[in-house]
Image (cartoon, rainbow, N blue to C red; front, side, top):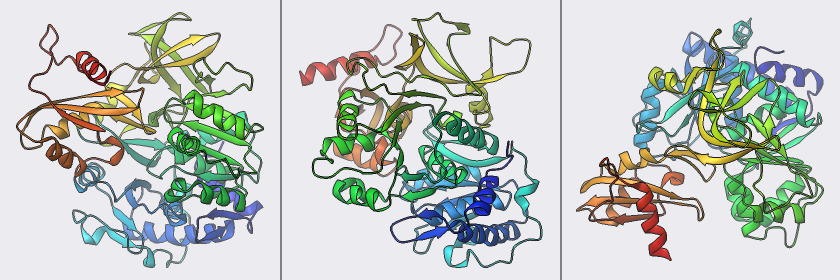
Length: 499
C-alpha cells in the first residue's frame, strides 16, 4: 500500500508519460508535464516555507493549475487548503485565522482578500521556477500526515476545517478501484468545486488509474448542449457528481436532442437522489452503471455505496447500500447497537476517518469518539449525526438527527445561519427551518429590521448555498414547554400558510 498520494503520480508518470493527465477548457498537460511542474514548484514551496507539515492555502479558479498547486504542496511535504475567494470576506478571514497559512497560492488575476498579508501571497507567474531538490521532501512523509484541510459549515458559527491524511485518501482510492474496477485509461469529468470533497475522488482516482481528469467549468451546467458537446469531445466516461448537478440536467431535459456517448459510470452523492431525476437519467442513458454514494467529509468522501438495480421499484427509497471494504458502518442508539429494521445514528470506523478538525480540539473530541462497542481497545469512530435503518441487508438514509441538513450537495448547520442573522442590526432572535420537499431554507426572525435588510446582511457573510430562500419576520415565536423555540411549529405554520 502506498504511503503518499504522489506514489500514484510517480507510477502513472513512469507508465504513461505522454498520456494527458489534466485538462480544462484551455489547457491540457501530460503526465510528464505534470511531473516536471510539480517537482519544480514543489521544491520552490519547500524552499520558501523552510519546513514541512504546514498549511498552504490555494485560491481556487477551478482549472488545471489548482490541481498542480495541490500536488506541488504535497510534494513539498506540506498540506493544502482549498479556498474559494468568491466567499464573503468574513468567512475567508475565519478560515485563514484557523489555519494560519505559511503561504497563499494565487493564480494570475485571482482576487486575494485584503485580510491576507501580502508577504504570504505567491502568484502563479512565479510558481514553477525552481530547480528540483536533491531529495523529494514528500518521500520523508508518513501516511498519517495531513494531505488537505477542507472547510465545512460549523455549529458555532465558525467553519470547521476537516483534516484528512494521505492514508485516508489512499484507502478511498484503493477501495473504489477494487469495487468498481475503473479501467487504466478512464476519463473523469469533474463537476464539483475543489473545496468540496466530492472532487477528491475525481482527482485521486484518475491519478491512481493513469486516467485523465477533465475539469468542467461551472457555466457549462447552465448550457446543457455545450456540456454534452464537451463530454463527447473529450470522451468522458466516468462522472462522480453531486446530486444537484444531475437534477439540473433532468430539469432542463438536457438529453432531448443529444446524449453523452461515452458515459459508462454515473455516480452521485451529496443529498438524496429524487426518483424522477434518477428515472430520467436511466431512461436516457440505460447502459450506464448508476451508483448511489454516501458519506460526509469527515470519512474521506464515502463510506457506503449502492449499485442501482435496473429493475428496482422507483417508488421505494434508494438505499445508500453497504460499506466499502476496510470500513465499518453501523447504527447506534446512544451507545447501544440497534436491530435490523430499527433506526439509529450512522457511525463509521476505519482508515477512512479524518484526523479531526484542524485547530479545534473540542469539536474533534465531540465527533470522533471511542467506539462504545469496543471498550477493551482504543478504536475511534465518527458519529455522523445521520439516521439510518437496515432493511433486507441494505442501509437506508432516514434524515438528520439535529439541525444539520444536506442542501445543494453541501452539509449545512442551520445554527450557523441563525448566528449570522442574529448579528444583523434590528434582529433580536432568529430560527431556521428546512423544507426538504422543495427543498429550501426559510429563516424566521424577530426584531425591527426589514426582511430585505436581513437578507442583504446574510448575503454579505454566507456562501450562496447557505442563503435562505425566504426570510420572514414574526412578532412572536412558538415555544416548547421548556421555553425553547418550537421549530416544528414554525415549520407547520409555513406548510399551513402555503396550503
